[in-house]
Length: 73
Image (cartoon, rainbow, N blue to C red):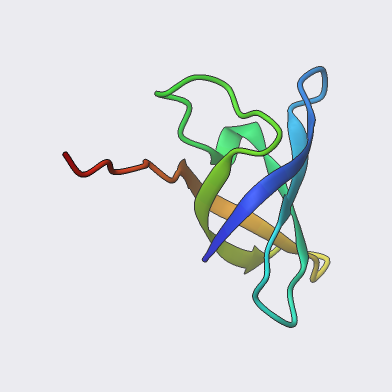
């Protein structure tokens, strides 16, 4: 699934990803579930991720990685 980070709390290490895929519209994520090789997450960053349910049944993002833009020359 793809989406955009709409909220990021660097102090606590979590945020929200917005998706256009229904029925999911906002998904919680924690920085430990994100690839940070390209740097820390930021608001408006496009990402790819998997959606799983935690032990209480809430949806959350896992295996999060930035969407790399490809340019044609």
